[in-house]
Amino acid sequence: MTFSPLTYMQQTLDLAPKSPHPTNKIAATLFGPAPGGEEFSVMRTNHWPDPIYDAIGTSEKIGNSSGTIHAETACILSAPHATQGTSICITDPFCPNCAKNMAEAGIKNIYIDEEGFDKDFFKRRGDHFDTMSMQICERAGINVFSVNMFAETITPILEIPENYTPVEDSPVIKEPVESINEAVFHDLIETATQIHKRRKFCIAMVENIKGERFALTARAHAAIGYSMQKPDEALDLLTPIGKYSFIQEPVNRMLMHIARMGYILFEDYLYCSQVPTAREQVNIIGAEIKRITIGDIQKCRDPKGMDAKNQLMAAKILDFS
Image 1 (cartoon, rainbow, N blue to C red):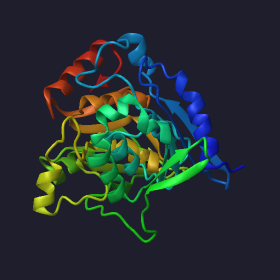
Image 2 (cartoon, rainbow, N blue to C red):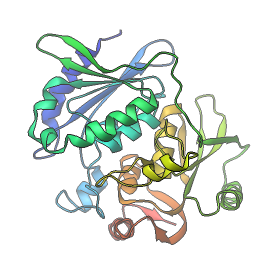
Image 3 (cartoon, rainbow, N blue to C red):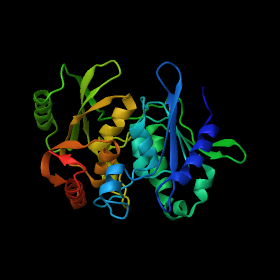
């Protein structure tokens, strides 16, 4: 059975009060085609992953990141099928980090409850929605709609031409492998280290629904649709706007790409060339990953990522090998 965005939005609004967040209760529903021609959906609120909730609690940050997974990202990480070409309903306008994640996950349509634009939280922080979130969607080719549940209307905020193809000048690299083992994994790491040199990168070993196995490599890069090959634009992209950036860190890119393609991650075969950022570490836990191999354990984008690593290791939530 296929439901309309209005039906999914109502279900999303009904779920939002169940969010454990004391003030900002947000929910999302991701939906799209499943193998066999049916439709799947997955619903999530913003929440603390169980390991963080149980071992650290809700009042302590993880480095400089909230310990919560945003509802949109939680849907992507929990999707039972490939997220390429899917749609999502959200109770509130989305932050730039979720915009980057939805772009990397291949989401095609975003529906936002109209009342979300009137909430105090959005009014205090809405400038990032206009200056970053919507720009990311435009570059990535994502349609954005406002939904009025009272009038049962769907109004376009951003419509992308059907023939638009976003720029991807550093796509995730995929290469087939015959087997998944430590020897193959370390050979891949050694080769990638020589190729990418000082660039941050992530490697994952995955399997598709046909049982075919691949090694994936993702480098840190600007959000899909942005090119780092234009010097003037690259400089702007590398400059953060407040706490947000147009750069998608390699582990986040990898997690979203795995969801986009509907791959299954071999959990013990995830590598990052340096310690991931605090937000990446929270997303790793949200993806129910318990171990990550690190190239340079003393290197991170910022000191808060190192703080997060120490917190999660001390709490025995995430193993950095």
